[in-house]
Image (cartoon, rainbow, N blue to C red):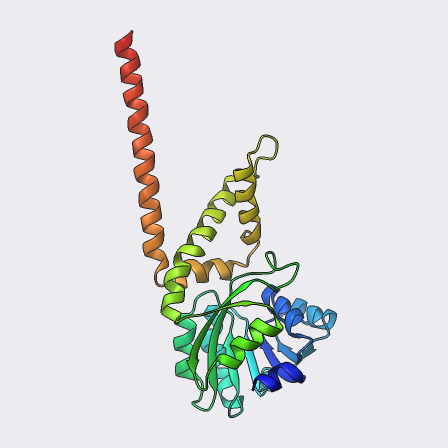
Length: 264
């Protein structure tokens, strides 16, 4: 399979052509003839710009490799729609920010003759605007033959740092890594425009991190904070620590004020 993946222009079907679908198409275009489906008129314009062939969903699903780059909330509908059209031995992947829910949906809805490998590129259009080489990607083999050929292709051809894991372990770790990052970024963004006059290097780095995720689609934030089953506990622990720190600072101010009054 590795030989076919790396040395020929096999057809790859891409479902969803938003910001990440477009990034994926650019990274994969040299190795695959890409056909894509997305009902959004703006997506069709982007396909034309990137020399990607628009096609009906059933045509895209008939490809030997199918990549779902759509919101997690649409997975059930997409899986049911593509299931009758997937050829025997087809490889189905997704690129969602959570893994347990999509893995369960795909495993339940897709026919037994297809292979499933869930992935999560740990980067986005902002952080990978200069290319995907050197970026990390999580790989979760779910069903079918060994995922080693996929791992080798991602590492050798795209230069990605591949981390093989399980959907549960992925979601546990990303509840902290992404859950907190996006939560803090959203809160800081809603505070208003960032300070630009008197800044520290640490503040500037924080604003760089905020800038990487603040323009993500609302569906991405929803998936990270709602669809990850471990995110709620991480948020609660984080907010609890903020409450404790705030209370400690308040008590210290009161103690300082009391000491000052007594000294007078």
